[in-house]
Amino acid sequence: MAVSSVLLATFLSLAPQGPEGSAAQPILAPAEQKSLRDKALKLIETRTAYDLAPEKARDKANRDYQKAKEAFQKEWEGRIEKKGNLLKSLPDLQAIFANSFTYERRSGTDMIKKEDAKPKDGLPEYSVMVPKAYKNDVPMRSLLVVPGRVSEKDGWVEGRDHYAQTWDGSASSKDSIFHVAQIDKTIALDDLPVAGREGEEEKEVARIGSLLLGFGETKRNFNLDRGRVFLDCGKESSAFGLRLATHFPDLFAGVILRWPVFQEDLRPAASRACPCCSWPRRRPRTLPRSSRTASTSCRPAAAP
Image (cartoon, rainbow, N blue to C red):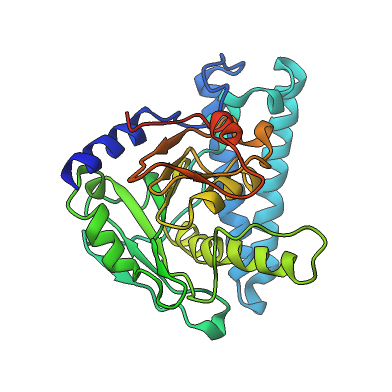
């Protein structure tokens, strides 16, 4: 476990950091970027205040918001007129908008805890580990972790047990937020949807929701570095993990496959930018209508 944790940590550090194109040169000067960023932060701040304001305070809150909106739009349009289309300049967009939302001050614990997500809320159960080093104003790397499946009868490993057997005590546990999904025993993630069969679309939506609904809460509550979100797939979830990376190609910086299963019918164009670390404990198998073609497009390899 210690060796694999070190190698997986190496994979996390070597995976691309942030979106492609970040090496391009900005078209704005640093002072111009800062001016636009300050106005963007004011715009977000006043809009949030307006959304949360009680009825008697909404008129003033709306005036503040409209003033901030006008100031931002005026400078934004002026910079475009003088410097060119800012929407085509990724370095400028990152400088202006990255980490622009305010998060509640929360302290880390270095202990994984089960969140109070009740079925009536429409959320699946999940657990979160936030290291002591976490600061609400500094984006932190995160992992969406899928525990292994014991069997069809026994369901999935309990999230905190899975974390204890994998990442607990590793170097990554000190500088990353871990969101560990708790999958309902009735859900089989690796099952392939059968096109045209009744109920298949609903099953796939349930599979996706079992991971992303709870993870959405973690993204809202903690300052996650959106360019460094990794997916860690346990037994009987690797094929689904690759599918998920093609459904949401901008979400994950990399995918870890602890029990590799590959399938051919993935969209290579969507998955080619997502590095995969394959960690086979036995020879990788393929699902029906599958081949290693998908693994090539996702660039899986032995652990770095």
